[in-house]
Image (cartoon, rainbow, N blue to C red; front, top):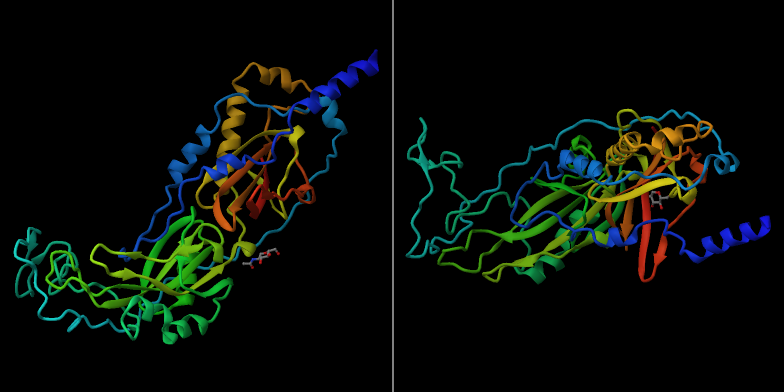
Length: 420
Ligand SMILES: *[C@@H]1O[C@H](CO)[C@@H](O)[C@H](O)[C@H]1NC(C)=O
């Protein structure tokens, strides 16, 4: 009789499909990758941490518990986590800016003039020491880059010969700049001299630089919250604003750009080859290098959490798992903490909590351990994946690797566990 019951239970378990270790559909549904927009010189505060935190709390919709009962749990392998001493490698610095200003004189042919219909409707202002009124938001003596035919800012790099898109991506002088760049301290080169810039879901911002300043870019990344990698490249941009200008196809300027990422940067993510503008001008990229410090970065311990532990792979323990959620964006372990705390708060408020609490000290409804990691799809960083557990595990138990799921390859980066 007893064996019949056990057989029945086993058959039931076998009949229901094994739950997947990760919610791959959620990862596949992440928004399209983004990155620096050509023509935008600088962008910061791209990541809205407060909104992300709200979404982590909102991810909890119902009471959830682990499937293992107290009796079963006692037979599960339980070991205490060893304390670790972790060192931080963050240094603060700013991007150096000591190169001479590029000359915009002669950049625009004198024959280029605004077309007949244009009238300047920008608001003008005056200042002592300025000969004539100038446009609000510009600078005394400088021209608003949004004016027709206005010379475009920056352009500190050499212009390719010949000055065409094909000439730009072929120019050995530009390739040499990227190839000869020294690796910055604390970062590992992940790719060199590609003709595309990085696009991914972990974008944090971009700067236009005065030189191919790898060290300065690394120092800037060190000051940006969650930044663990950067992409430095040269971009072919129009020399003047051709909108409502009699000269329609501009010559080019070369901009040094550096974009910042809340994940590693990989050659697979370097898939932004530029764009063709409405006037036919081709924005293209060359000398694109990637540098990453994901392997040596310890995430900041979220409040109320302890024992930051680096995991080789993923914790997959279906019987003690309380929940899991994917958050597209930079690697932000605080989202997993917010998610875990929200789940515990939801569970505490439920009548099940009192029942669970009496289970010999094990509470299948209480998350006291979580694993968070960056998930990469076909080599491109997608977002923070969180898994909550009712029990604590050693890092050696994090053995799951997602690998191939059909024709899509998944990989894990920066996997960390914490105790709550
Ligand atoms: C980080 O470590 C992994 C595993 O050892 C290695 O495969 C990868 O190349 C490293 N990445 C960097 C950027 O050093």
